[in-house]
Figure (cartoon, rainbow over the protein chains, first blue to last red):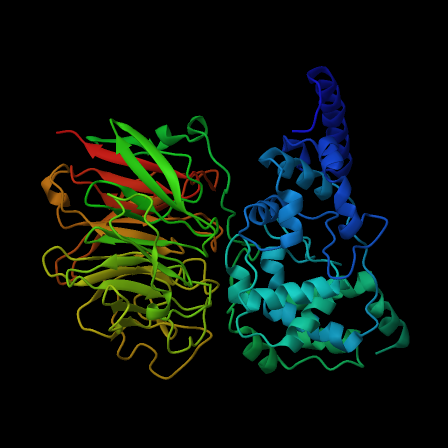
Length: 205
Length: 423
């Protein structure tokens, strides 16, 4: 555990709770219900931005943006990687010493960040193809109509295109696990071309 | 189209609104052409052929924003398990028998009383000992891909993950025994979805294994959608039941020895069904309808063929819409009232593909030995509040103890309850 003396920690927590309430109030969301402390999460998450980017800077190639990601999705994915159930060697090392509480706090910190804004596609044909596929496959049922996600179902809107495509292919090929197997099912036998169109469409919302 | 209207329709915000409105009226293809006239979207037929694998058609459903519920992977403290909300018929009691095992699911019991429990995503197999009225547990195996299947025969424990099979020889005498890997002999397909295994030994000493259909609705490849049986070493495979979507529970009738199994109905066809099934196998290799014919004879809306229900064995009982009827066992004990003997307890994990929650209970099914006159009645309820439309627990499996009491596993809380009866 990071070294906080009790008095200092209490102060930090008090300020953080006030901050969390302010953010929740401003955003009009249900975040006020969470017990996790985003200020401690910010400190714990400091090394993450080198690869995952920040609201000001996009993530490195192939890396997911975490800003505005669903809190429950982040907790569960970090848990899977920490336990070695989802095999991501660079993350397993980073998460090795994270307690369950650390996971909660890092997750709430990222979930409160402003998500990446949409860029125009520049490839209308591919975009339209992706849109039609997304409708037919009803991605918006679980991920919601604007692809912002809910609970353990991640936000997809304006995520990196390369990351989305690689992730969908990994689900299809049984190389990736989620908290259930819905995505393995949805992508069963879906060809590369369709996945690439979906990724392009979702990355340009 | 006027140039002004055309430009207006290309503005992103308007585009979204128009798309949303038109999608709602089903005029999606038209909208695509209006918004981006230079692009050629795939035809409706093309999209359907690509996407019917998932079979997701939420526009048929009243509430399309349905998603599976998230499981809990961290320990739930006993104080946070409101098991006093569980209701059972008069004369029965419920106790919190074991806890602290996130994701606990299918159970098997050893000859000397050890209980093993499989899990799904968390990848563990738990071993539970009952010593002096206290339960202790350890993690026997971990980091497996959904080791849902556990079975015991001849002193040996069998553990089946999606892609691997292990046998722990004489484990009750030798707790640190290294498992023998039988993966190559069983030749299981690698697909993950609906392929977490339920396994059990039959009265013929063979190991029965489910190999589900790796989709919500599709024409599964020939090695999927079935229940098989093997000689315990993985040889001599035979297909016992075909046309199975996803069975996560079966048992053998105490009088006839016939296999009875639960099967989960498809999603996204309707709020109220097709319902889950309780089936009886009276002939080796019988066909149970997936993907063409569901429940009591409902044709599928996506995978169509002529006479879809011809040659299909219909269920003994309907188990409720999206209820996730999973673990089931015949009751043969002496503790419960006599009319429970040869009846079936079925754990229903509860719905997600339905606006109003359904299931989240254990029901009791009574039927004749040849599968007639089935009646399904509630037995263990209170895991879900229908008024609030919220749940706190998800029963997944049932297992009878030698004293006639019944264990019930709750995946959501990582707990096992024991139901007993006092005369």
